[in-house]
Length: 620
Image 1 (cartoon, one colour):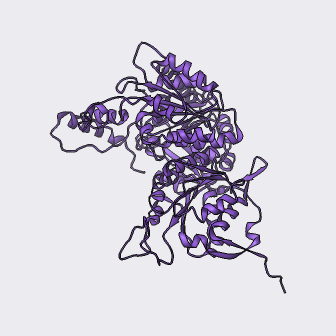
Image 2 (tube, rainbow, N blue to C red; image 1 turned 135 degrees about the vertical axis):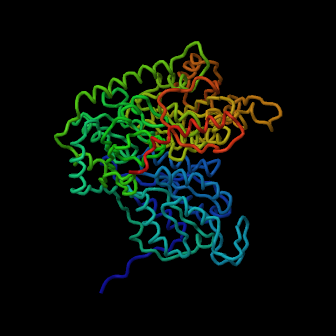
Image 3 (cartoon, rainbow, N blue to C red; image 1 turned 135 degrees about the horizontal axis):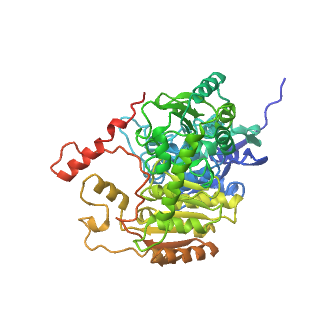
């Protein structure tokens, strides 16, 4: 006869928070909570029950008060990215518009394969008070609601309809968020009545548990086939993606490349896999890449793609490579490893790179050629970022900051023209110090993401800085987490580069033959009297230190003051919307252009766009 398990009576909300606080992970020999806390805005859908549960556990799971739910989600994603997906934050929002605001952030986390737990209010399970405030009614399907929209942007989705369900649902959600192949956001809908219902939970559910990230060893047969193919290569190349860092495989990547003398190029997510000065680092690849990386990509015969999902900005919409180039996909996710008929090595990058080691060595002439191309690109970047007698540019501001940061400072950028400019021009000073969010290319991530990154950074590197680059468009879309950073004492350096609108999309508009329209403020016909925002005054109103500068030299002096400051510092500088863009290094990018038009310029733009299409690989 066995003893009856000991139980504790808790509400659904209390059980969720108590369980989260008991989950740990081992990182570098130390046990830390997997969940670093949460971001929350309370409303009637989560304040009375979940709020009560969080209040009692605020020391174990600190709750950061956001200003916008979308920004909270961005901050949570940046926190997870800084922690290489080994830790995450939860976000909580009320039923209705508060939860709806999280949709964009969930999509960003999904596209970037980042863990984030969403605990969101829902309509009453009993339906007795229906329709309640903010409820969406579907007349033919009363169980359908706003929260169902998250099914498309979540890796794990559940709605708790009985308190006992959390015993199964919470571990399933956590296992998804920690899974190297299926990692992404988890959504749990919490009906307002169910949050407060009680259940006699087994006390064992809340005992401390230490988790570890699974490392899947690659199949021996796949490894053997990949080695055999590599040994045929006359012009091999490695594409290093973000998965290299998530696997903790930077050392293994470097060791493999050095032993085989294979040139390495980086994706946007894979920036900072190698130091800028490493002799085998040939530069970033793709649409926002470098001439050096794209040149050798065109000539490579065997391409080892490690930890990358081969997004179109990496592949130049699949024009960056020879039609007869052979791919080996090394990825823990089968879906990514098998793209474009790649020979697959499905498994953890660290273990796979170790297994792929052999006596193969690339021809010295190929490595010499790649390094010569890289040297030319280094010279171009040096000229591109240098201040001079020319209009202010993104590249110049990037160059100034790059010269003044410490090696563990983290740079954050997203959407618009800055991801391209940072990717092409930033010199990596240390591993894992670049966060260019381009998986979802989401405006508004910059400042909110910077706040989340700084929260994570302050836990382990309090003396380092988080440097955010944002354009005026993204700043205007979402800037309130400047206030959040001031309130929480999480200092950022925010560089606001004002080009008078959405200048990079205006550039795309012009480059395809279209007239400037509705992107730059001066070209928006519904604007009555264009004027410039006083970003300095706006940032200062939120409690930040702020100043406006006129040129790169003044920017440098302001950046030094920002480094010395103990609170969030905003530097504003106007840049030219037409000149100063990085003009070299770009691969083709497929965009839709009109096949019929009355404009000769648009027709010429369409023909120019289509002229590159014969180079596009068709997946064979």
